[in-house]
Amino acid sequence: MSGAVRLATLHRVLQPVMGWNGAHPYEFDLGGGRYGESGLDVPERPRLKHAGRVTLESAVGELEGFDYFYGAGHGWQHRLQVEALLPPDAGLRLARCVDGANACPPERSGDIDDYQTLVQIIADPDHPQHVQELATLGGRFDD
Image (cartoon, rainbow, N blue to C red; front, side):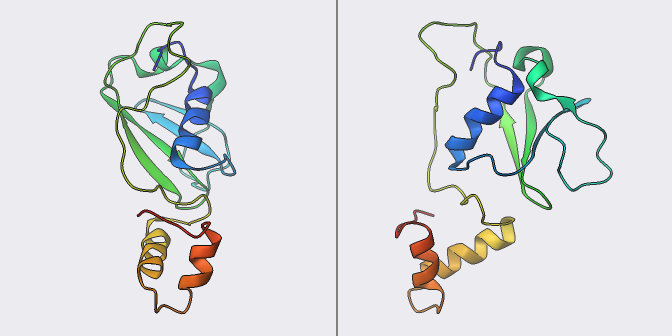
C-alpha cells in the first residue's frame, strides 16, 4: 500500500476485505497515537486524532505493525503487519491483497465469542438455529 494513503482510506480498504460495511466506529493505535472515529465504547481511551488528516507513512514511521479496532463494545482487534510502504504508483490504485484464507466474521457477528458460537451453529446441521443462521449468511459460509 502506498504510504501516501490516509488512515481513513486504509479503514475504507479494510472494510470490504473483511466483508464489512463500515457500520461501526474504528480506531488505529500506532503506539503513541490513536486515530479514527470516536464512538468506541471504551472510556479509558484518549481523544482520537482525525484519521483523515494523517498519512500511513507519517503515522507508521518505523513501526513493524499496529492495531486496528473495529466495532462498538468489545468488537474486533486486528494486528496489521507493516511489510513495506510503497511510493505512489499509477499501477497500484490503493492496495494489493497478498494472502488470505477462510471467511471473515460477518458485520454483525458480535465479538470473538459470538463469532465462535456462530461457526459452531453453522457447522452443526442438527442445531436448531442452523438453517436460520445459514440463511442470514446467504446460504453459504467458509469458516
